[in-house]
Length: 404
Image (cartoon, rainbow, N blue to C red):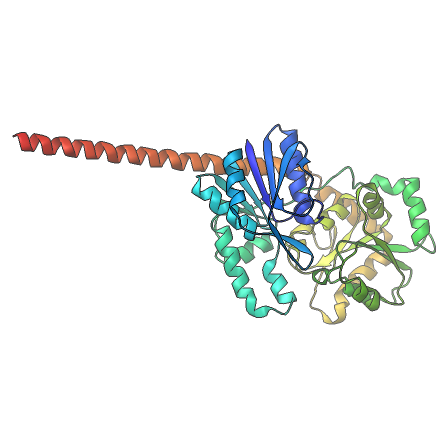
């Protein structure tokens, strides 16, 4: 297949959208398909896995590059002649790509990944939430197929009257995130650096430190004995988080990636996710792959990823002062057997979610859209030929009647 991936975010910007796009490109290369990437201008590499990367005009909003509709998108699609257009987290750039593909009879698969409506609520733009959903509906209803990462996302999209929906989750690297790393000398030295004693229970968080992640919730753990909190990541809310957690036993590890991130997960005993606006929750899968019990809010993507009482706990995010979050963590801190049992269950939960299997599923969706598109075109040609035949028969009858 020839796949054009149009994404609102790409390297060097690191986030969930970029990560999933890179994993899809890795898989397309593995399976021998051809691809291009169209993305906002932000200093992206000229090639990724041998695939050409094309940057298009961009504006900057709150330090984030935003691609704007332009004729270059159409020219790039014409030059590449894809079989399918994959649109990642579509907004302005994605909308242009869907429209251009539609005009050319090319199938489109749109990936819903960013809670834009939640962003309007969080930034005191509640009056704009309805408008945000209207825009989302307009963009996604132009696509042949919309893939959402969780049942919660699908329910939100259905309420917004978005059609052509299917569930498509995310994969996880089962080798990079593995319980065996916990037994390495590297992780032993890491725990020595971040804890005051070998008996301390390490509570870990991984992700952006931003308003939507609500990392300040960790303040609910204040006073729990024998814990050390480790925050991996950085972002605009760091000052707010440090203020909320002042005086608590916290180690700020900063941004980590690759093996360093893998070892960080392996150094944790419990993983806590705090935000309620996740459309999926990739770090939850990574924590489970690393053999950790996970505590996360009963909201959004985590609902699908955690079996309450089996491989972690889903806390009520609306309880006063996050009392339920605290109780869930307290139980795991006090019970090493529960941590071990839930960690093993979490690992088993993700064993069928390798990126290879998830991306093969995506290729199946591509094929379905291509087949449906071609079937529709064949039907249109058949109807056109039938109409031409009917017109010919009618004209012959007129001639015969005229001669008679």
